[in-house]
Length: 462
Image (tube, rainbow, N blue to C red):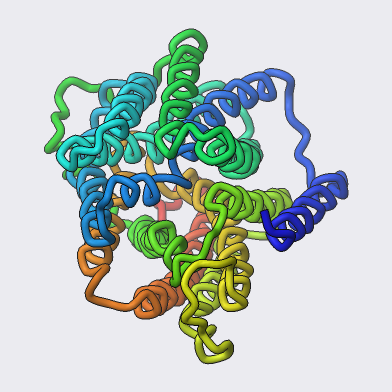
């Protein structure tokens, strides 16, 4: 392996270590032993769930290409996954609210294990089925676990601020440390030990099975609105009404869709962007470097969220602008560095510059996840949390499907440029969300003050 990758990985590791070890008392939140036990149980489960997801990341594109499918065929497989998440995500989210979040989490494990099993077949139809199952699982992963956590946290009477601690730790471990280990482990299984690109998927199924056992044995059930008189259609209408009637929820959904849409497009494009001439790049090691960058971002986020006076609505504006600039690098690099036409070989200078930019983007991703989780816990009503969160994923999945369907129609630079524009729009919407939230908070404080002076005061319209 080239010295460049090792040095870069080592440098990022050093920065993360310094950030973590240098945390002072103002960067930490005092908690109870009961909360710490609850938090650690969730972190174990979340880490196992994310291990099942991250082990598959480095070799999805490569596995399909090894089966002989071209970029268009692979794009359609990815479309099936995102389309499945769009079509079935809201349904499974509503079922999670009504039938139980714990059951939904167990369903995630079963569905994703079945998806992993399909990777052994080179048949396109079987792989398509696997992508559909994976899309359903993804919807459950990014809604049911968070919904269970928020409901259980509140049910046990823990301090609201402590949620941000769990969120930042979950991203630091699940989207950082675990992802790094999984990237290296996947690289070892597929390349070093010679088991091939399907081996990481088998390992993922094992971790998912272990996580499911922990959930079944240690978690209690909780619900959004378990009342029998609310069918799925009624739940959908309630969630849609909540989004339409509250500008904060609507903007939060738009921001999430724009950022995640750009992020998932990046997941599809980073491999061809770094190796446009079939350069020999270590996919697993680069993936681990991305996750180390995300870990760096989550470490920064934990410091930011530990300060009560610093709001996520404020600093996320800057994060989105930086993200937009990093995804512009594939557009700007050919103008700054003469592209090479030599086939094969090691990563080019342009590739090195883009790799640095992609790692910066992943650091922004590490800040984004705990911050968006914190904002969702503040703005989304508990009774329809999973349903609304999966409503947010509908425009996200439509966006990604459109991009992937036209993957052969546009150069990579055009798609990266489009993602950069969407991230700038997300920054503008984040600014608007902060303004609306502050106005809402000011109204609430004024009404509380008036109520204290005059108990007969009528509530202000929000």
